[in-house]
Length: 517
Image: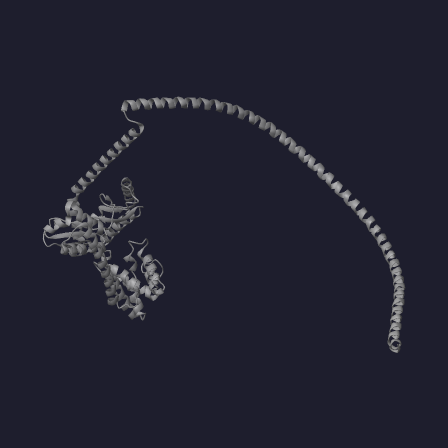
C-alpha cells in the first residue's frame, strides 16, 4: 500500500496536471488564433475593396479605348468595302463583256464543228469507197498475176536484189578492167619516180621484202588450192604477197615495216616447216608476232646501250624499240634518235650542261612516233603523255614538248635537243618527203576504215589502191556489208586525196570451234 501511495499516486497527479496544462494551452491558442484571423479578414476585405475599385477604373478606361478602336476600324472597313464594291463592279462589267465574246465564239465553233462533222462523214464515206476499190483491185491483180500480196512483195525484193547484185558485179568488173589497163603504166611511173628519188637498196628496205624460195614449186603451195593459203596469209598479216615471174622469190609489200617483218618471218617458217594450210598459217603468224616483239625489245635495249642512257623504264624501252621499224621522211627514227642523243651529249658537254640528261632527252624526243598511228594526236603530244606516264624528268618532258616549237623552250636541255634534232635532219639525203607522205596517206586510210562500227581491223594494201576490211560477223550482216562499203567509199572520197581508185574489200568470216574430248 505504501508503494502505491509512494509511486502511483504521484504519477496520477502528474498526468492530471499535464492534461490540465494542455487543455488550457489549447484554449489560449484558440483565442489568440481567432483574434489574428479576425484582423486578417478585415485586411483582406480592405484590399479586396481597393482592388475592385481599381479594376472598375481600368475597365472603364479599356471600354473607352475599345470603343474608339472599334469606331476607327469601322471607318476603315467601310472605306475598303466601298473600294472593293467599285472593283467588283468593274470586274462584273468585264466578265459580262467576256461572256458576250465567248457566246459569239461558241456560236462560231458550233458552226465549224457542224461543218467538220459533215466533212468527216464525207471523208469516211470516200475512204470506205477507196478501200473497197483497193480491195477489188488487189483481188483483180492477184487473180491476174496468180500472186498473193506477200508473194508479190517477195518477188519484187528478189528482183531488186538480183538487179543490185548484177550492177555491183558489172561495177566490180569495170574496176578490175581499169586496174588491169592502168597497172603496167602506173607501175612504170612509180618505179621511175622511185629510181629518181632513192636508191634501189633503200626502196627495198623501206617498202618491200623479198623472201627466197627453195624452188618454184613452193609458190604453188604458198598460193594453195583456189588461193586459200595466200588469202589466209594476207588476211592475218595485212601484207601483199606479190608472186610474179621472179624465179625462186616472193615479194612482200606493205607500208608498215612491222607487219612486213611479221609476214616475212611467217613465210620463212612455213617454207622451212613445209606444212602450209590456213590453221598452220594462223599459228605461225602469232609465233612470228611474238618473235618480232622480242626483236623490238632487243632493239630498244641496244639503242639505250649505244646512247649510254641508263635507268629507262622497261616498257619505255619496248616503245623505243618500235622506232626501229618507223621512218620519218625516209629517215629511220631509231637511228635518228640515237644520233640526236649523241649530238645533244656533245653539245651539252661543250656548254657545261648535264650530259646524261641531254642524251636522255635526245633519245626520247621522238618517242611519240612509235605509236602515233595507234593514238590520235601529234607525235609531240603523244610523246609528252608517254614520258609523263613513265615518270620521266620534267626537263626531258619539256624538251620533248618543245623540240618542234609547240611550246617556247625555257631550259638549256630543250634548246640543245631542238638544235641536235635539226642537225640530224638537215644532213643531205637524210630525209625524203614523198615516202613520208605516202605512209601517212596509208595510215590515214586504215584509220578511216577502223572508225566505222563493226570493223575489227583493216589493212591498206596494193600501195594504197586497196583496203581490206575484216568485219565482226556478229555485228555486220552480209547485207550490211554492201552499205558499209558504200559509206566507207564516200568517207574516203571526202577526206582523202589520192591518185586513181581505191578498192574496198569487205571480209566477213564466221567460225564455229569445238573440241572432241
